[in-house]
Length: 322
Image 1 (tube, one colour):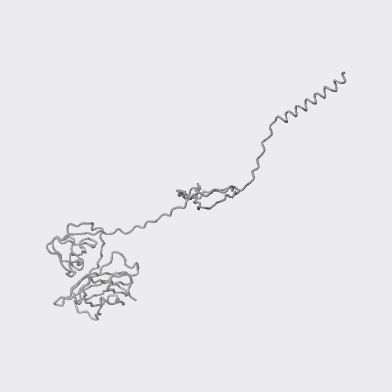
Image 2: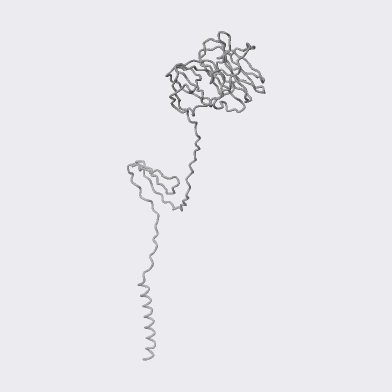
């Protein structure tokens, strides 16, 4: 009996262990299996009417936020969706381009019109800023004149008269000035040369509608031209090189007693006209003078050097001679 028990008991224990292990294996949940997705052809989309979708405009060119642009489908088309492998997108922030800084070049301040009223009953207008210049006309009490420029001391004013003549008047005889005289161009006029004491020789006739005159003028010499007024504003540009002091042009005529008188002289422009520092210009602008009357133009070189000159009967900015 004991022998049987010694055989049966181990056998029973072994069976119990086998059943326990089987129970544990059967009852414990198995890990979920990974489903396998098979790619199949997607169903065809039904065509729908085209509905435009508004697209937001990007607000910042440097923004890294992508903007989806949708394009309406054409009616009747059947698009198919093709699966594509996902891509690793790398977003790179690009700095916005710098806006170029504009360099503001200050433009010259335009000179506003300066107006004045004649004070005396009768005021002579002269061809230049001084009593030594010839008579160019007259203005009267209450006349309104447009002031164009002034001398450095502002004691003489260049004006346009009511009858459209241009000349100079004493500043003390002009009142009720509207505007700032300090803003006017300052005209520097070399003093007029002395009047000739003898009739000039070698006078060349100069056609105001013809070409420019040119030549060389030695130091301490002068040259004479004669011209006839053609009832228009007369302009002479006397351009010479090298740029020296001591040059002048003088416009003269003779009275009934054959006495010389100065009609006008050249003035230096407020700014260089041709941008060439090797040249200098003198300008005379006047008229109309007496129609058909012969006037004389004298070129004077009181410098110590010979010059080349170009005498132009029109308002130009550049050298107009060979």
